Length: 132
Image (cartoon, rainbow, N blue to C red; front, side, top):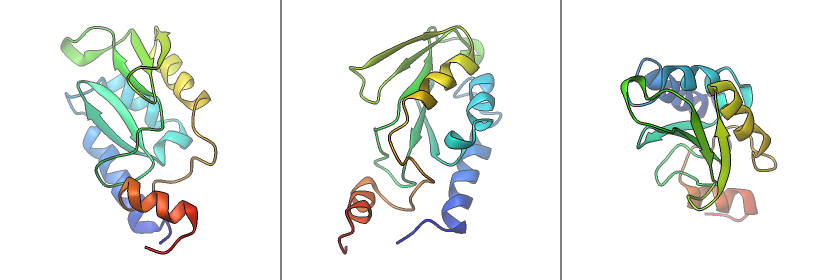
């Protein structure tokens, strides 16, 4: 298994679905989409937080920090908090979406490339070089 055009299509479709969504801040989505290293990851939203997965299928990966609004409300806009990759790891607070996204990019895992078409378990097997 390798990443392909169809993988990129799944990722792009997920981004298109988020653009204009009321489930997450529009400015946050725009800032994340403008960052090439994040745009190649699979975006997903939970509790008004923007998450990034290294694979396209659920259960998504939890090895990339995520961003959420400090207060829910219209537009779910900033200021923002950055946490992760796990919920117990606090990264910091950012006044703007661009600052929050920069904090995520600084903490991307090594070799964080395009999203893999599959589950986290399939990604782990692929990265280990073993056969499925």
